[in-house]
Image (cartoon, rainbow, N blue to C red):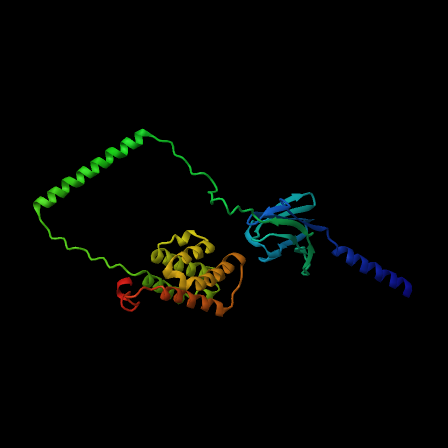
Length: 317
């Protein structure tokens, strides 16, 4: 009798385990196996499962395998007999070269009427991200050639005639106004704000925004370098906004008045490039040091006789 009860118990446990067994699988893939730095990597997870399973989808981290998620698409669901096929599409990008292994990603599911949540892992995906070859001897070229608009003489004639009519009308009303009433027009006094005043004011406003304190590290370093590069354009007549950091340093070395800031500027631009292009997360002290270096660069290159910030504050507000 005891032996029969033991056999029945084993059958009940086996039936319970069988009732929980479900058919589900998850397969991951990419559209290619080799990419260049910055290319879009299209990553797909296809889940095939019984229709009585509720699939909640994969959990994909924003820092998965050192890649950044560009977009996530809504899942696409299809039916196939007693099974359902759900497709999840993601777009990644990676900004440095490497042999990448995307690890298994967990897909969670639960059977109807069962509160226990389970998961199944996808397969690993292997791909290669190669660097972009750059020939430093050649000039930078546009991605596409400039678009040429075909010349239409009818439009040219139309705009010339329209312009002549506008100029003629303006001259007529001007002569009529001058003839009917002579009015004294006071001369406008234009106050040119020295470049260092504009730069220091912009740095002060950036400090008040508290970008890096709010976690906006990349935006903080982009704005502070743009302020200094714009100051170089106005102060030393350099197209610094269009130059790389190395090119800007080389041009500063040619300026006699700028030699005293070459080392400070090199450290300043190098720290900013690390944050913007290498995803380097600086300490709070580094962010403060960047502001101090920027102010020192401006103050050291101020010429004798230029007004201080307090003397022209009213003119730039």
